[in-house]
Image 1: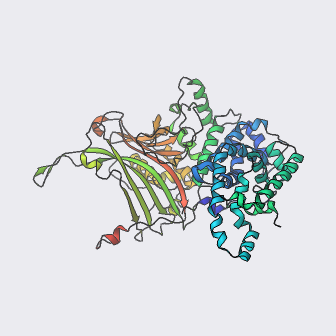
Image 2 (image 1 turned 135 degrees about the vertical axis):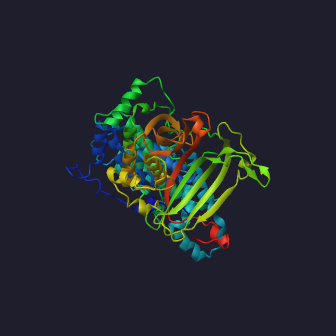
Image 3 (image 1 turned 90 degrees about the horizontal axis):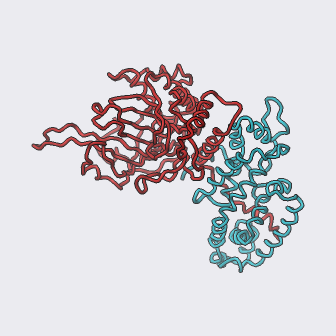
Length: 217
Length: 362
């Protein structure tokens, strides 16, 4: 079992980290992402600061979606920052926090691995499958149902049935903790569209989840 | 009824740790790209490299970070840092115009740090090729032995306790040998090919000089490190050769903390006779720039990535065929450091001491 220095420093706890990204940085304060990107226009090496700040988080997101197999998450993370660097001239410097932008790039790269994501979700959907659950007594099964963990196979199946864009939107909100506004920035769509699409996606999920028989082979 | 959105949120998978090696590799790819981008604020050394790219536009080579086709099947380990696909062909800086001070100065800046805890292990995987030299022909059991030379090759993985308090483990996979240039490969060279050996490396209560916690106590100034390099162990070789040997010893299958590594590279640049050779490769075929000193007719180089200036491996090249008993320019040793990481445990492995009864730690 390889546990690494990264485990040590810990993947960042989820939730907002507004403290790191203060408003416009004064002298001696931490520069905003926008500040770093702006500096990198003059001194490209500054861009590495963005990697140091966000690569763990982007990697966590990529690996949640793709798993660690085949190094896809590693590739996506590395590529995200290469693409971001090449596109940095087009970054909207009015946005201090670059995470939505990075998530957007990562999301595009992840959709390049769509097939392996879906394959993985389907595998998850099969693993805990029906067999064991059937042996549980009725109350137990109800208790199990209440816990999201036990529903994971069904959830995985439901996720696999969403389109790539739907999955991305849902998981940016649910797994990457982005606000609607940030998700809108990441996906380059209006915030109102995030809201309405999410509504549709939830309806779809509800439908899939209410019919667990359809989702297990 | 459970909210389907909360269910998705709660079912968020655990994020596996971002391996330091993959992260370092990703960062290296990024900094290789940023280093190429035009800049208005550049340290002197990089400006030189940048100018050289333009001036030497006729020399366009494949990026040193590109994976090369393995020379033999299964020879290149899967986790070569910097060998992730996707960077494409680019021009390498013409490093031959750089001095050893510049190359080592840049290496001194490439200072990532894994910061292992004392109770952890440094894990280093590498590929090596070293010469095996038999003694000159002599009589043994009534027969004349034949002098032989060949290059044996291995994949090595070593786990070494960061503070030297725990036993280490060494895993060796024997690869196909190569000919020592100018010599036939003897049959015995193939004896172990394809086999893998795992051995415990018992501490026996000794803490080697190159464990992480000891390296961390080495000087962090160029002057202090230089004094340390020249402080021994001395042989009958010239002092600069001993010092250069020590540089290699401090870096081979170890993890030098960033501050000491930086001082070491700066101090190494002050060793007289240390010279730069461009266009060399390490054992994994990664292109780089060599910095080294000649010893016994062989130039012993440290190989650095030509763009990120991170240490890739070592290489020995014949520069005096009589002394080395091998044709000029042939390569007689070559290594590649493929991955350095930190682990909490070392795998189980047979203990060579308890297996050989009567042989004790002394």
